[in-house]
Length: 283
Image (cartoon, rainbow, N blue to C red; front, side):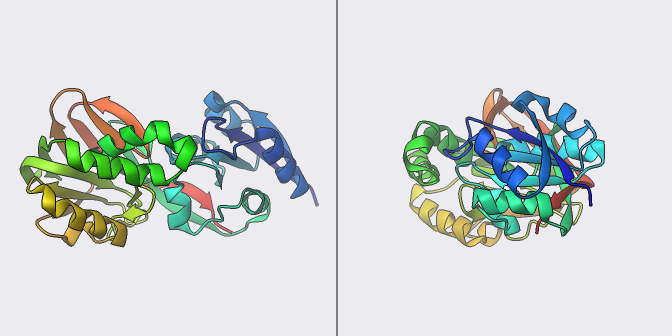
């Protein structure tokens, strides 16, 4: 039986366990022929005639990787070596690099998922504006030191010093919210912030979930934070929630968005979903 052939793309800046040489050795040990590509070569890696595209890193690279794999007609396998690994946790994937490499090579069970887009930019989990983006910004210098706890520190600090964001949110053309908000979340898988989630979000239903936490007293923010950790933010307090194929977020110029852990300065944005546009190896 011929060995499975995989392309490996690793992000060396992700987390503390992204050793490309060691990961290549683990994949070979699991029985694969391995072709290695640099981070900026996702499309080339997926289209080079391999059986699978294997990516090692955090959530930020998964959208582009899933897009490249789908275009090439091959499944995507993830070795989660990022700081938070929200997608992997949500999908029940192993966080152990050696076990993840074994599954990447030998796994037979796959799942077809939707791919969300922010003005064409692909993502798998969530895009948000407001406190989540500010928290992610505060967390950046601490991720190498305290890992996923950096997001908790960032959220705590942002809740004390940041201000609500003026915004308008539309779901399939209908107004969901107009005013000032602490946070706006557009969710595909619904995972974000090192363990928070939007429980209603299903990455296989062809819809996006939009959740807004309206501005109010800072005293209420811990309750919203607790609801996020429990996956119940969409029904907490005065939160607004909508489901749609097309979500539009209108904010002031150069507002920062947190898109799967990556900070993107943007203005108003259109969010859409590509149905069944990614195939992920699960086990």
